[in-house]
Length: 367
Image (cartoon, rainbow, N blue to C red):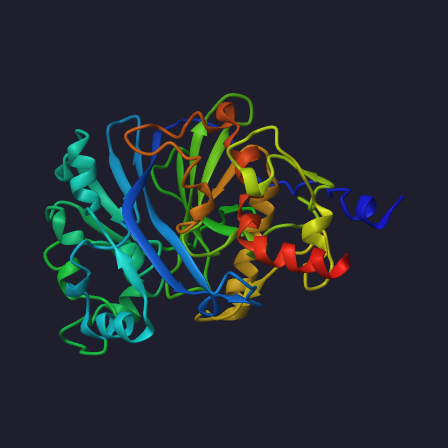
């Protein structure tokens, strides 16, 4: 057996111990219309030729419970981003972050028949500007839900704290609810909170990237073991942070080829990418986290994402995954039928297209 074949033998996926199905909601991924461009070195190490900047969307997600309750997970970037806290506006301009936003999420859902007043709560995966949107476009009846330690460390807000990254007007006059993960419920490696109390939607404690960082797990079907959408927020910023793994090794043949992602029968050798791997590995992610509030905690959260990603019944969606833009069906379409579309198989290795120039260089050197 060759080294490539040996490394490509997957380890069985871990049992995530997801509670048995009971209820289901309608789940829709929203293209918030935000497009961002930032330096890769802010997030990933090492960086690769042709990948000096990270360009991507900022997804939001609408969860509609069978009872009629509706919540939003993340809001992308607010259209009037220059109304963010001054320290953030200054950081954006100084660091050369490029932002394009056409619409606020409140306007997007209203255009398709969901009134902002119908939204019970907006859930922030964390407080960074490319996730918080503009909560003031929702009425005061819409609660704002945040993760652990937010109230203790963040609620002074701007303008009370001129150096704050958040604007206090986002929660002024509305309920600000902080999630507590003190129960014994765990899904995979993460502490979990059953939001509706029926197993249809969980919030997950995924710390490290920022204060109070949370992810979410949405049940998309109930048949057999069910299927799920994992909303990763900023647990990772790129597929290369959590792929390949011992559960999902780099395959000998990648199909569809990441260079022709929209041609379903195209193929390319996995060996092309193994050659450029820093450790020449088919079972370790290509890159690591460069910066985070707590790199060790953030790395632990990534390991948990790897286990989720290994499950066939689970689709991992990162907030800024540009490789999926042409594959996802966005709101007002529902995402519940994702397994039938084959989007996971087609999208798993799409991020490798970002390494095109490196692949060409490595293989030119070999020849």
